[in-house]
Every structure is written in C-alpha cells, then in structure tokens.
Image 1: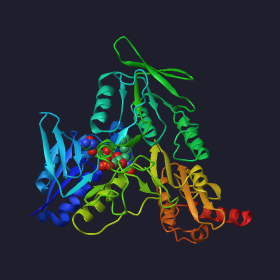
Image 2: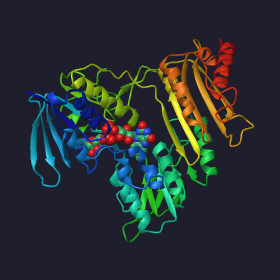
Image 3: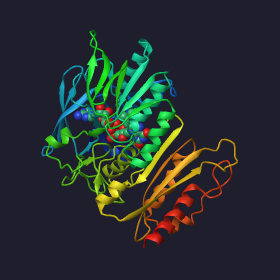
Length: 456
Ligand SMILES: Cc1cc2nc3c(=O)[nH]c(=O)nc-3n(C[C@H](O)[C@H](O)[C@H](O)COP(=O)(O)OP(=O)(O)OC[C@H]3O[C@@H](n4cnc5c(N)ncnc54)[C@H](O)[C@@H]3O)c2cc1C
C-alpha cells in the first residue's frame, strides 16, 4: 500500500519536499499538501521587485501553480489550514477556510513547513488602513493597489533590515519621499555597525531619509481611520502610507502545541536529516526550523528562501527512503537598495565575541572593475579572521553594481574553513571589465594576513 505523506505549508520548503518525494518515489506515495493561503510555491523574495515595477505580474512570482502541482500528482488543498497535529495517532486536523468544513488526514510521514510570521509591533494604530506588511503576495497586491488608487507623496518604512531597504527602493521608484525608521544605531543590523554606516550614508545619498536610534511609539490616524503619521521618540513623521519590515519569527504554534521541541532561537529542532528531534516520522524545514551555524557551532534562525528550498529537497529525499542531510549554514545573504549592493557571510563581530573567538578585522576600499575601465565603481570589503589561526570568520561587502556576488568567494572559503593565508593564493578571475588585477577579496586577505602576523 502507498505510504501517506502530509505536508503542512505550500511554499518553498513544503512544496519542494512534496515535489522531490514525488519525483523519487511517486508511485509508492500518496501526498496531501495543505496551504492556508491563496498562493502556492510563490516567491516572497520577489515582492519588493514586483512593487518596484521590475516584475509586471504577480503570476510571474509563482514557480508552480496549484493546477500544475495537482497534475503532477500532489493532492493540494488550498485555503485549508491545519489546526492540530495528533502525533500518537499519526493524523492532522484541517479546516477549509471557505466552507468551514473540518477534515482529518492520516500520515506515515508528516512534513511541517509552516514558515515564519511577520513581527507586528503591538503599538497603537498598527492595524490602521495604510499600514502594510510584505509577507505574502496578497500583501504585495494590497500595497500596489493602494499606490495605484491614492496619490501618495510620502512613505515611512519601519525597519532598516533587508526587507525594509528593498521596500524603501520600491517606494522611491514610485516617486515617494521615503523615511526609514529603525531603533538600531545603523540600518542593516545584519552587518557590523561600521559597514551599516556606509549603507546609511549611501541611502541618504539616494535621497532616503534614514532615522536610526528612533523607536516607533505608534501610528496616528485621520478621521477616516487611515494612517497619517508615525509617532516616534524623536518626533512625528507625517506620511501617506507605512510599510512594516521589522523581521519575522518562526511559525511554530502548531508544533509547540503538539509538544515538538523548539530551540533557543524559537525554531523547531531537527537532526541533520531534518527529522524533528525525538520523532521517527515527522520532518521539518524552512523558516520554521533552527539550523546549525557552521562557523560558530551555535543553533540559529536564518529565515531565507535559499535554505527553505534546500531543506525541502533534503526532506523529499528522506521521505522517499533515500538519504540526504542539511549540514548547516554559514550565514550568507545579499540585498540591494537602488544601485547599492549589500552582502555578508559568516559571523559579525558581535557574534564572534559571543562565540568566544579572538579575531582581527580589516576593511579595504577598492573598485568593481579595473580603475581605468568605464563604469568602474566603489566597493568596500571587510574581512574578519581568527587571530591565532588566520581562519576566515566572516566577510561583508557594501558597494555599487558588481559588488555583492563577490561574497560567494568568502562563503566558499568559510564552508571549507580556509585561512586568509590560503585565500591570498586563490585563483580568482580577472579581466578589466570584471575586476581590478588584484581582486578586492585577495587584497583584503593579504591585509588580514599582515594584521595577524603583527598581532601574534
Ligand atoms: C519581502 C521578502 C523578501 C525576501 N527576500 C529574500 C531573498 O532575497 N532571499 C532569500 O533567500 N529569502 C528571501 N526572503 C525569505 C523567503 O521568502 C523565505 O525564507 C521563504 O519563503 C521560506 O519558505 P518556507 O516554505 O519555509 O515558508 P513560507 O514561504 O512562509 O511558507 C509557509 C507557508 O505555510 C503556510 N501555512 C502556515 N501555517 C499553516 C497551517 N497551519 N496550515 C496550512 N498552511 C500553513 C503559509 O500560508 C505559507 O504559505 C524574503 C521574504 C520576504 C517576505
């Protein structure tokens, strides 16, 4: 008899797991997937670019439609929310959100891929009209609809993380005067403050008003109930609309209620195969789990699509009876605001201190192409290496077009536990349109090596 697989959550992790299992053992599996929303296999990552106008249609952000999944053989139930997990009996209870009908579904394998929930500050006025989130395609559609219907002059983005800065660009491109408010000392707290300061300066140069160390206290509304200002400790900012980009938390309510283990980061705990710790036939991946950081050795919550897709693939292999593992992450991420590119991998200085590393850092200002080549632009590379051994611990890049993807060299070096001595000899590509003859990563590695020799 076919084994029954139940998937909770129909986006990157859940549908990758379902599709992979189907590809490997389709004839022997019966796969049921539940998705409470209106979209399946969608790219939340594309929302800022859709709002900005780079992508003209939200259908282009859907990798595979519900019909395509069903045609492939997955029994996909849209607008159906799983409300309870009975781990002993091996079944889930789900409610059709349109009809209210409740169904139970038995499983041999359960895949929990419930993703993350956006953090909404409990502040006065946060639910007012004109305050938008950007987690789902419906959120993106609501914001775009508002921008098309109502003439807007000003926007406030709350949160200067990667979603906040990407949304700031999207709103600038609609011709709005944009203010980004963040309570941290610099935007992009995924970078060290000195690199965040470069982002701050560049954003101001793009005409974006960046207010740091500024805590939002509430949202003031007009007589029509629509937001008209954001109140902060540093004053009030009048606005026509607000976008919230404060971050997300793992969506673990179902797992927690069923007694599944959660880690310190709040994510579900799994082993290397993404089997939930202590469970024989329950698997979990994507934004709802915590993962191992391969540099610090600690468990962290890193909600990124790149990991969610890999998790789904690993789970699909294991559910199909094969063997696959997800070893962990090194913390690589990339983002942009207008032509400013921002990238990081590994540890920040504060992470390195918390993990007990003694380290040195260097920052190099260089160019993206040969200095004489048309279109060459500035970039800064910061490297951090362990003081005693020279092992690379982290890298950050802030610069103009052509900067960000250089971070992948450092990510591979971290993955392979390379030292900055090793990195000085890397055979990196060079031609004037792509790089100076000494690639900025090579220059930074050399400088870090010199600093380590001095320090030891
Ligand atoms: C604006 C934005 C930009 C981003 N940009 C990037 C980027 O550039 N690069 C990158 O790597 N990542 C990016 N991300 C993050 C990326 O989108 C997520 O990491 C990825 O979507 C996680 O996939 P997931 O399947 O784990 O969770 P989700 O995509 O959150 O999917 C979980 C699904 O489960 C459903 N669900 C939850 N509970 C239930 C239930 N009880 N019953 C039924 N269904 C349920 C939800 O409706 C949801 O559709 C971005 C995210 C946002 C919001």
